[in-house]
Structures are given as structure tokens and as C-alpha cells.
Length: 528
Image 1 (cartoon, rainbow, N blue to C red):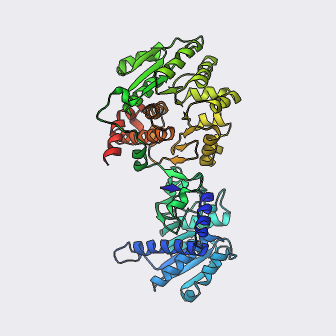
Image 2: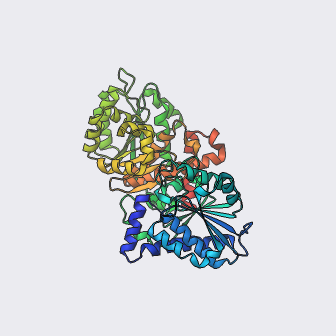
Image 3: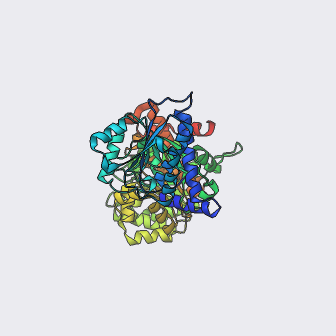
């Protein structure tokens, strides 16, 4: 399933027009498709019966209002007893297509009432909304960002306070469709009919509840058209992950599934390399060598007997000594099929020296996580040059704060335009980026974008990132392409988190419980 931003939706519409479908026909298709759903749901004998025959359509100036006018016409044609009130929230100077569809309502003028928002007092507005059985929001659509004008906020407050069924067209008014940021008075929809494709706000966890039941209405834009749009987003689902998953053969051995070198830990952090090594094994890699200080390896010996150990002496700061650099380069190049660098590593000059050595001289693909990323960020321009000059495929797995350090942007700036920013960073630095958040974004160096929708708040605990890094690195070591490794790791990590929540609740689950639930996530993926 493709997800389109507001700008990409305009490109898709232009492509449809270039292929012979007019803008007028796109609007007609959108309105007719939504009206058909409404009629099936609320006006058929076997559907949900509405307590009345008054429909209120909230109109803006643009084509979102035009969609609402098409719906009004189709409902009036189909239901003789229906009465429609058109409430112009931003005046009656409409777009050309919206004005055309207003004219097409003239044959039904006896059943249509037209009102302007500024002519209605608060009490009258409340009464209008309460006497309506259905309220259709066609004010802003995908073009909105920022804060609602007070007169529209007033109108939406009245609508939200009514008992009517509330339907949004494309996106609830008051919500930015690209990032899910919404005004306090945003239209609270029971149903959202989105045209041609889902928009990011429909899936972002900050905003999706305000959209209600989200249904896609086809309008004449094909999947093939959407696939041609640069930066279009693929929804991360089970089918996509199954295609990306490295295969397994019955006639095989441990050497068939790769070797992962996991470099991390320091004097004060021993759990990160244990969690990442355990999750890597749970995802199918043949061998894991945990290269860490003795303090970290003690826990690995006790809880993960399958792992191979490589003891790394500490430097003066309690971090891995730079004297280990040459040996680690040889381990990566001669023994491993992939490496994971940075879990629990700490940020010191000694750590930076190790990261610098590995990025400069290794010949196998790498996942860089946690303090590996923080070391690169702390190096400033040198760190960015190291990424740019790397001769091997890289996967970076930052959370929002780590990516803020890497990019020099604030977290608010990143969240306001996460897809474009992730796309730009990945393509500019020729790497795969896993931008972790409640909805994780994956961006490839070739411009592919993915967005996940599973997972829960129980994953918001220290150690969850280490688990994810080990999972991604496991698939990379097994021979998956970097973006495939990221897709598999992100989806299965969140799916295992959902399984852990079912068993233990979001409050009680731990990152180690997520590891124990990885087999359950695989089972759901492979056997569903």
C-alpha cells in the first residue's frame, strides 16, 4: 500500500490528468465514491439507520469543498426525503470546480439550505449541528497546516459537540496530513474517506485516532502511477516483510546464515551487547561473536551460551581501547559477514578512535547504533565525511534525539517533515536510515521510503533500541540487502513488542521479553 503526502498527491493527480482523466472527473469520482459508501452504510435497509434526514456539509473554498458538493448532490438524488444544509465557512468565493458543483445542486434547491458561518450566532450554530444526523467536513482537506482560524475553530467545536455521525473528506480539517500535527479544535471524525491513497496522518499514532475508521476511495489514480512518484511511502505490512525475509534451506548449516560481529559495551554498560546479541540469534543468524569488555561478556556467558566471545581491553576512560582497532578490523574483514557497532559503547575520544578505524578500513556491511551514532555526531563534519567515504553499505538506526545530533536539526523540525528529511539524509549520504519513533521511517540510498504502523508504548524503554539493532544486523549478516534487513528488523521488532504487550501489558514488558516473543512474531508472519 502506498502512502502519499499532500505534495505527492498533487503529482499523482497531474499524472492522472496527463493520462486522460480530467480534474473534474477526479472530483466526480471522489464524491461519487464517498456518497456510495455513505448510502450503503446509512441509507440502506440493512445499514445503520440515522436519527433524522438532515445532512450538514461544511465547506471551504477549495476542491475539498467541491468533493462535499458532489456528495450532497448524489445523496439528494438517492434519498428523496433528505434535506441538506451547506455551511460556507470561508465565504462563497469558491474554486472553479467547487463552483461548478454548486451550480449542479440547483435542481435540488427546494431541499438545500445555504448559510454563511458569520451569520450564525453560537447558539444557532450548536442547534444546527445538533439537528443534523450527518456532518460532512469539506473545509480544508490535505492543504491545511498551522492553526485553525477562529471562525473555523468555532464551527468545528460545535460539530464535535454534536451527536451526529461525522465524516471527514481526505483528512479532518485542522490536521496537517504530512505530519499529523493538529489543532486542538480539529474535526473529530467517525469516518474518514481518503481519496486514492492513505496520507501519513492517517497512520501516525499521534493523529490517527482523530480520523476514525479510515476508508480509501478510488478516484482514477492507479498504483502504477503512485509507484512512479519520487519519495512515495510504502506501508510496512506482512506481505512486504515476507518478500524481504532471507530464505532458509533444509540442506544447510550454521555457516549458511552468516556471521555477525557485535562490537560494543564499556565499563559502565554491560546489557546492551547482551540484548543485541540475543536478538540477533533469535532472528536466524548462524554465528554471533560478541566483542566487548570483560564486564559485559560476563553477562553474555551467563545468559547466551551460544555466543562466541572476544574480550576487548578498556582504555583509561572505561571505553574500548583504540588498541583494539586493528584486531577488530581483521575480525570484521576475515571472519564476519556483517558487523554491529555502538551498543553501550559510550562517547569518549577512545570510542571515537575505534569508530573512525572501523568506518575507514572495514570491508563488510555495518549497522551503527546508539553510541556509535553519538560518536559520529560528536565528530561533527569529520563524522559526516566518514559516513560519506565509507566503502561498505551502512545502516544507521537513530532515535529522534540521536538523529537530531547527527543532522543538527531539532526534534520538532524532524517530526514536522520526517519523511522528506529521512529521504534527503539517506540519499545524500548513500546509506540506509532507520529513524526510530512510534512510527519508524526507513529510507534507502535509492530513495525508497517505508513506514511501520505496528508496535506499542511498551517499546519505549531503555534497551529496546539494542534489541532492534541486533535484529537488523542479523538479517544483514544473513545476506539481506540493507533496506531489506531494515524492513524485516523494524516490522518484526514491533510485532514482537505487540506480542509481549498481549502477554505482559505495555507497563510490565521488558526489552528482554520482546526478544522472547520474536519467535511468536515470526510465527504470525510466516503462518498467517
